Image 1 (spheres, helix red, strand yellow):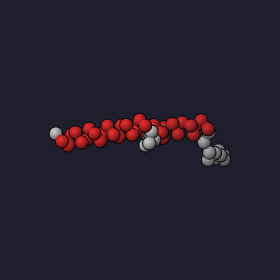
Image 2 (image 1 turned 45 degrees about the horizontal axis):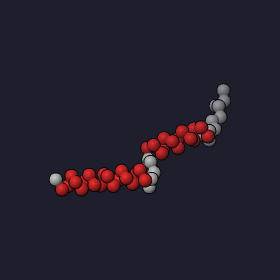
Image 3 (image 1 turned 135 degrees about the vertical axis):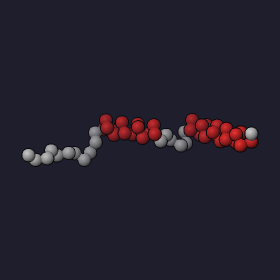
Image 4 (image 1 turned 90 degrees about the vertical axis):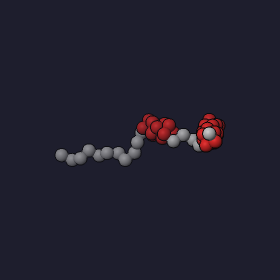
Length: 51
């Protein structure tokens, strides 16, 4: 019995799925939405520090 050969590449579909999952886990830092969220977070932290 020989071992089955396992390809060391992934399909385009697997690559797309991994890319989607990576993007969801680590979204882009410089999108307008991400910048807006960071600014809102900073404003909230400043407000909390003042009170």
